[in-house]
Image 1 (cartoon, rainbow over the protein chains, first blue to last red):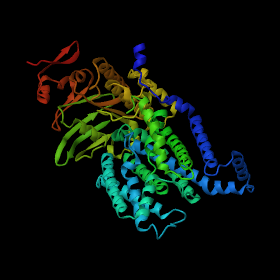
Image 2: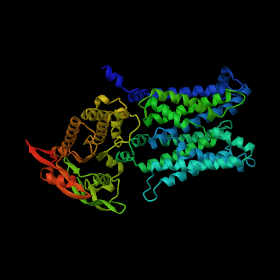
Image 3: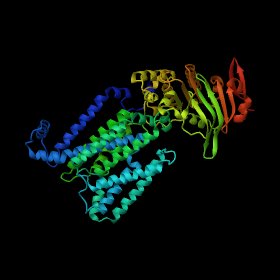
Length: 362
Length: 257
């Protein structure tokens, strides 16, 4: 008996039966935590806002009355609220796309960056910064030209990778080829970025390297609306594939034998990942680690079932980025740290400690 | 129920399977034997619609296999793969539950089916264990339980076909017999079974028919009783054996000289 107990694997995750039973509570708790983190993000900063005045502002807003404290209104509504919401949206997008990518590639270490999205976005953004930076700053409906360049770069690289990995006649997409093509195109886009860094002047160089570390300081409600709508679309279409993603973990032919139209599911998921990560990177720069680590953490806690993994990853991703951004702008206020730096600093230790405690995890 | 008419499969210019025909009825167990690279797995892929035919036709329940919609077909036929690539820590119960993906029979019914299938494969005690922590044989039994779950009830789909690619390769003798007994029980419920099997003793004991392939060609096809012989085994595998009948049971014995 003693022997058997010792042989049981160290198992962090909650049993699937309990996850199923307590799911409404778990997701509700996650949403509540996210709301608390967003409220926290509204109160702290270079100018601290008392919880009492925040409460007044909230009540006034809910009841549709005029807000008395105009300073609070200004700081909350035009600075901190859009920023916190953008952070939540971008974090959720990155995490849910990461979870889907890991499922699709059947590799818990896959990251949307692997198929070239981030490198492509970086190259696109670099092109805009170096060649158009000083002439056209405004952009289009509050979305800066740099963001448009990044999005275009991301999409160009993903389309190239997807075409290279897809058999012209049969239409089958090889996941292995896609990973390799992603690596190749990432290097290609990376070298383009480096060439641009090389020819850029000092100001541009600083702008380039800051963009690469990610930042949310330019947040506005147009961007929030954009991220929210993309998140809704991508989230719903990925969630609808949760059974297919579970079956795909068995292997592609096994999934097909379970009645899944693998070709169609794969291209849908890839389109979702490209759009989701493309938009996220375009608006916030390269925010490292969330797409890789958040799904991993959630999988260790809840198991790999995509029915729970996808929504919970979105919640935890949102929480992590809101928290990281709050820390990034308060730690050495009034100077702001790049948020990508904070996500890595926050995420890595959590990840390492989970790995240490989970021996049978591959 | 399953009918293959003169099918051929090409890979590049070479024929992997050429001019193979067979008929399989409900409740029958047909075993495909042959040396490595004889085209056994390719034949199975052709039946599952994973590779396209260079010639011939495959009919399942009297309609061409290509006409079956993917999901409907999954309710009728299930395939146990030779190896499994699953590297995510699903629990055993969750893996078996994946067999219900093509069905929409409700969580309650699914759970009962999963429990019955796990009991049949003797893996009930493993239900909460992560799949990645299992031994090879336990994984194989879990996968078979999943595949059986997919075509468990005749009420969900009829006719039903179970395809097994080397089901006993990683099992000990006791579990080999237990697995084959489960397959036999399944066949008695009216499921047609097609299996690739290297253990000729298992073929002799459990299969009704055999199809012997060599380099993609049919060498022998018919009832196991009349076709399994030392001469056939010599021809296929270049191995010396004796096929003996002991107490009504056919057996294959090695007799290397």
